[in-house]
Length: 238
Image 1 (cartoon, rainbow, N blue to C red):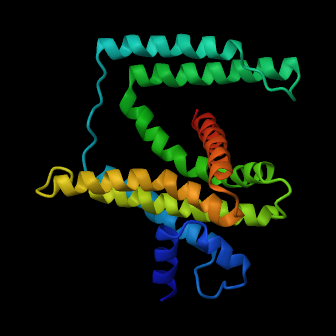
Image 2 (cartoon, helix red, strand yellow):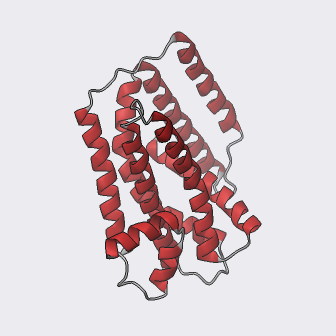
């Protein structure tokens, strides 16, 4: 069926659906944006369902961990001293430095005071942040692959497919976690480890497939993309 074909290709063939989409073989698979809506809704609905069914556990941090959060603030302040984006003016860099430091400090203090509430708000923010990261993902790919002959729409569809895969992979790990204390706990740990390794390898292979560059160059671009993406993700959540 179209659904089965799409899900199998999505999970086990990195970048394949994007290639097929732009090769004109669109009728065989679920449309990328429809797939994104379905997978994101299922994933975040499952998270909200689990938090409703299972009572929330109060998260308490000890004095040692509280001292560590103070060190985090100091580390952030020291790191931001050298913060500078070349194409921004001094005034803009100062504003960005102040805004990032303020938000990071606020988040750390909230974690120290009430980590449970911060975790709940984090889960609520993730869907919005990931949605807004889609066009940013595509823009980063446009920059990393200048001269590749790829259009922005091709980068965007790859971003959509990779996010769909991520939703499914994380959903799978969440389902596995329900059996973490059962008689198959060892199997659950092995499967979780396998998925955790597959996620970054999948992202790397998707770039190789979609853009056809060599292993080393793809790895360099994957590394740069990962740092940029997760940096933007952290800023979005903050």
